[in-house]
Length: 185
Image (cartoon, rainbow, N blue to C red; front, side, top):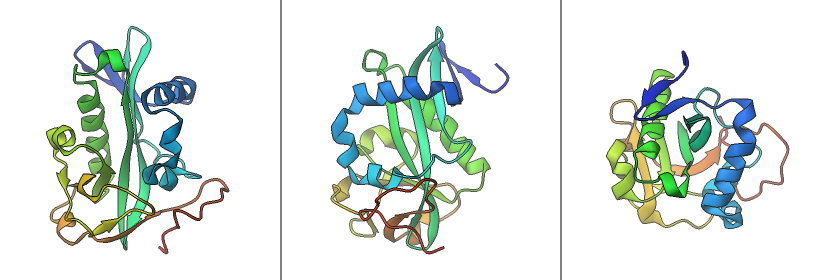
């Protein structure tokens, strides 16, 4: 395909509108209904994923994985929030998640984003360059394990001064969103 790259036996390509139902089903299987209570999900409510930064892994005409990136502010700095990253349970360990992240990171860098943050397991995300942020420097709206807040600079030295509350960069649809404020910029 002209808009995707081949990785192993799957293709990584931009998410399309007709992928939504399969992605929603994958997220439900992967994370269950409890995912909506997490702080990272609160930042996504009412916000569309950043255009051009959502990718899927397709193999044998079947969706195997998905990743999305969301616009946020960390203090006054524009940033992306990675997630959810989901891979079908029987397909894990094949490199699909890493390939999805690499594609998204390259696209975010090309689009001029300064950095990406996420909440996740450092040993896994370190494979693509993420590192733990100093505890207390980046604050999520709501409870989160501070030792799992990770970041990746896409421009030199951005993470050295990154600090503040994570806030939505915009609202694309009306929601009751007391738990995750909008950025001021």
